[in-house]
Length: 157
Image (tube, rainbow, N blue to C red; front, side, top):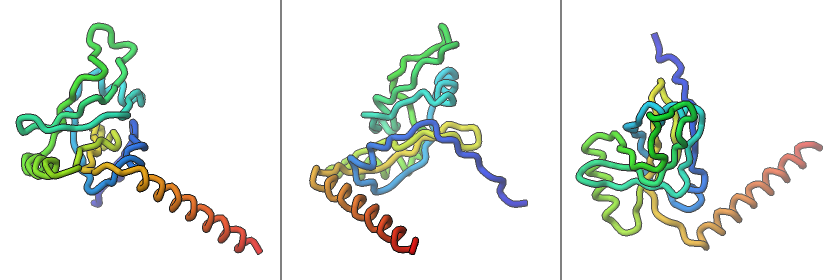
């Protein structure tokens, strides 16, 4: 019996992170969530814009991540921007702690998704880009698009 197909459903993505940062490593983490937060995530009502992760007392917390209150949640709803604990192995946390102490490294959430029914967050060890780096990326992407277009035109005939 092989591994059955793992259904991965993406709840939200931080597309701007790849534009603003160089991604060096990524980690899959679990999240400690309340019940209404999970329901809001399943409905795709989350936002990773301007969010980041930090390490306090040997634990990793994601800050500034917005999960909208669940509409049918009434008194059981949560604070949309509360810090949420990320679940990682101690060795990974120690490694990330030492890396983030180096110059220019930060922890950036890339996306939230559901894997085998559990909410997961993809966390990246990243360093910031300068404006000239962003311009070079945009130019490279435009050049690749132009080359692909020219190849398609040439293959038509």
